[in-house]
Each structure stands twice: as structure tokens, then as C-alpha cells.
Length: 266
Image 1 (cartoon, helix red, strand yellow):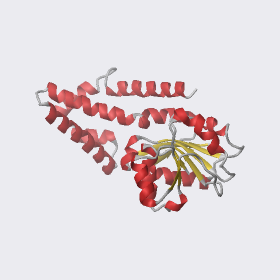
Image 2 (cartoon, helix red, strand yellow; image 1 turned 60 degrees about the horizontal axis):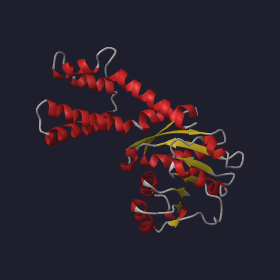
Image 3 (cartoon, one colour; image 1 turned 90 degrees about the horizontal axis):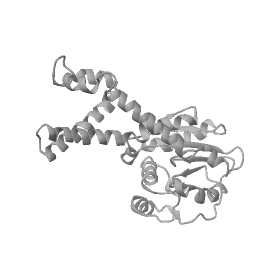
Image 4 (cartoon, helix red, strand yellow; image 1 turned 120 degrees about the vertical axis):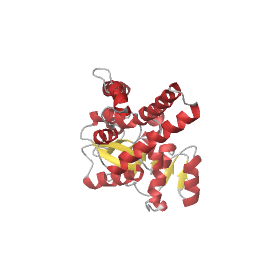
């Protein structure tokens, strides 16, 4: 059961189908099915329901991908179809495990996950945490579903999900800002806007792909580009200055995002 088929839900569905999931085992619950999810449902003849209908048996997994603001309206009906062997897998930002457990029978497995937007191209990473009722098999099933759109990292404590969100959930925005800032700096150095943007975007995406493929740690890759006394070293002298460089600024940003996540989760 996939509840909610927006961009992230549709991306996950596409990943499952590409990995060979039988479309006959999937039911989509979405009031306004459209876009990529509609195309997939039509192509694979997947059952979709605008509102939850009768189920012949409890689903093995209920994937909750609805918007957080409608969760309280949507989830109570979903909770009624969860059986003792069902695991609820949530990718709804800011919704705690306890917010699901209050609607479920005691002992139901719940996994809370935070994917990020590169999941749309199969290059995401998801942080996940399971409640105490989740069995190893249920955890493995959730990892397989989440792994259809990228890597999966499990954390031992739900309190760490806000840190996951601050680093990887919000992280793509930091990288996009870097591309923006690099392009603006290119213009300041005399390049025209189109050329600066092309150079900056290709550099950021190319460096990211190099990091992905090489498996060398970021510090070593940075050092490999930096010749003593060269142009890169001059730039890094600014970015890595003591007390006010990029590392300190990024730490401040991530901690601010973590703090806000905790506030929103109350």
C-alpha cells in the first residue's frame, strides 16, 4: 500500500517497478493521482483509490508518503487496515514514530525515514529509524523499498533524525546554493552570466559524481586538486580561514536546521 503519490511517492514507485516489484501487489491511495504516478499506474495497471477501500487482507507494508499537514486526516483510516505483521514506513517529514503508534494497535512495527530529493533520479540517500517492534525481516523489507531510490543509513535513535534531515534532507539546497554562489563569483570575476552559470553547475555536479565514483574521502580529493602556492590554495585560504570559514558556517547552518526540526516535531 502506497498512501500518497506525489513527487517522492512516485519516485519510489518507479524505483520499485524498475527493480521488478510485481505491480499486482501495489495499491495506491491518492485523492488526485496525476503526473508520473498516474503514468505509472496506467502503464502497469496498478490499482489506485481516491479514498481507502476495503482490503482483502492486511498489507505487508504501508508506505506513508502523504504531506505532513494532512497526515492526521489520512492516517487513522490507514491504521485500521494494519495487521500484526504490517510495517508502517513513513517518509512524512516531521512526523514522529509516536504520532503513528497512537493510531495503531500495540506492537505494530513503524519505520520513520527521511529521503532527499536526489531520490527522483535514483541518487538519493535516506536516513531511517525503526521502533522496537520492527523485526529484522521487516527492517530488511523497508531497506529494499527505500534502497530503490538510493542509499539507506539506519540510525539507532529517533532523536538523530533531525540531524539526518539537517545534513542530507536539507543538504541538496546547500549544494544548489554553492552552485549559485560560484556562478555569481564568476560574474564578479568578469565572466558573462550564462558562461559563469554553465561552468559553476557543471563543476558542482561533476565534482559530486567524482566523489561518488572514486570512493576517496572528500579531504583527499580536495588535497589532490590543491597545489602548494597555486590558485586553488589561494581560494581555500579564504574558505578555510580560522574561525570564519566554510566549515564553521556549515556547522552553524546544520545545527540551525537541526534545531528547527526539533521545534517542528513537538
